[in-house]
Length: 60
Image (cartoon, rainbow, N blue to C red):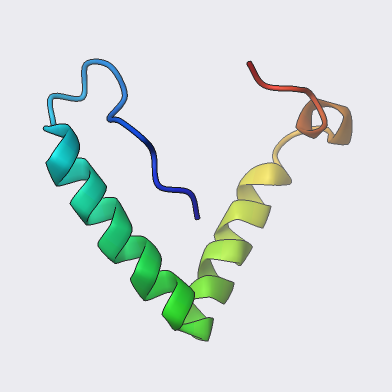
């Protein structure tokens, strides 16, 4: 799980608040194997919606 350096444009959340929430969530997920596995499975389900060639595309 990656903590973003700043909130996405137009989100309307102060950077410090978002960073605090992301950091706390990231630490929780990383410290709990069940949460980490649940996140991995969720991400895999999202990835399966795309063709393998699409998943290998470089992002800007």
